[in-house]
Amino acid sequence: MSADPFLILPPELMQLVFSDLSEERLEGLRVSRTWRNTLLSLPLWDTLLLKTCQGSDEAFNLPYLRSELRHLELTLDSSVEYALDLLLRHNCTQVEDAHVISFSELPRLPCTDPISVMTRIQMLSNDLTSLHVGMCWIFDVSLLRFILNACPNLLFLEKDEFVMWDSAMHGRTMYLPGIPDDTPQHPLHYLRWPAVDGIFRPNFIPAICPELKGLCIHSFNVDETEDTVNEFVQELGLRCSSLEQLIMTSQDGVSFDIYRDQLKDGLKTFIYEARMPLADTIIYDLVTQSASTLEHLKLARVFGSDTQRGLALGTEYVQLCNLEIDAADGLLMPFMQPVHGFLSTCCKTLGTLKLSNICLTDRIFDAVLDLPALHTLTLNGGDDPGSALLRFILGAAGQGGRCALKRFTICSVSWMMRVFCTVGMVLPAIGHMRALTHLSLDEFQDQVTHQDVMHFVRNARVSGLADNLEELEICADEDIISALTDNLPSTDVKRLIPCA
Image 1: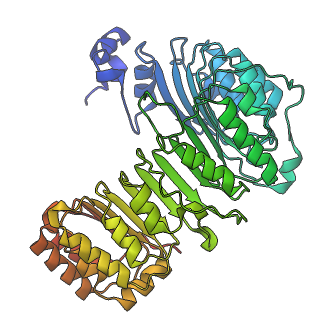
Image 2: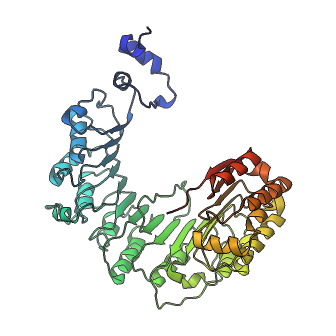
């Protein structure tokens, strides 16, 4: 019977065994408690990712938490208060990066006392430069204001969306009392925060965080007037001269782009896809005034406006490499019309393009084909019956190895049904696009036949696509997946599950 080495070797020897690990990083899955405790008790680690579903006091008596800890990601089903107690109990007061996810605020468990939580955050704040907080029963900006007051060296701060599990719980701890309104200026660089009450006060974030480089306001569930939001965005432009990224989205989990330091200051990312009012004039000014620096632009216009500014044909976005246009509710920003003119005149440096809910005409596809650096294209819905798409595919295939397009995605079930039913040669035609390395055909279960698949395979072999294609994602039945896997052995074929 062999002995477990972690049960017989002294800690000093274990430390020698693991002291030469690359980057002092160790990942273990399903290890025994003895192995885990022995390893983590070694004085090697300054980073700890801990997940536990044992929310009792006993679970927090962890011997491997020590004052040397600098980076912590803690996921538990107890409260944030317990998590902070855990750190303080083990003298972990020099944590620089804390990511605390707590599921304690589910209705089955009592709510955390916010004053107690904030007191503990304050005790950990001296070295804290990055903080990510999860669920919390505080619905206005008092929590944000407190953290900025308590953590003077914080550079990165983000909070997840609050999920309303039970309407009866809404009345508990709606705000954090006793927080002064005169928050001093703060060196915060990146802020990702849900759209809580008071977030759009023009004299709050723009005035307090003049060094802000990235701002993401997400998960819109508050009502604000267009005038308030307009003034807020204008104040950002006036006060936050270092702002590089402005993201206003209804989605949680949107992350900041990573940019290397550049000599030219200005807005590099602008994402507007929120159901909130923002005047077309403000959007137009933000985009055109950032023409020399903008790299990532995403616009989904969901509110109409009387403003009718035409396309500034002289404006070229010389750095723009990622563009997403969503004509939500059939609306499109006036300065982007016509789309083919905007693409051909203003967006010559595009590498990634996504078009959603747009009538895809021959002229739009011609403009797309003429983009010399375009390597990724996503088409999500539209009114094209299929003929324009087929013409585009054949045009891209005709460029052969000169075609820059490497990643091609088609999605939207209703549009795919029309396209594949009206023009049955779309999938076989894609087989001629030899330059592709990644192809994704989403949400058209039962719209492609086995005959179409085999025709696609034959064309892919002749054109050379079969040798270049690294990944194929397709929404199809198991028989078709098997046929593709058998006939394209060098391609990673993945089955996309159709949406319910």
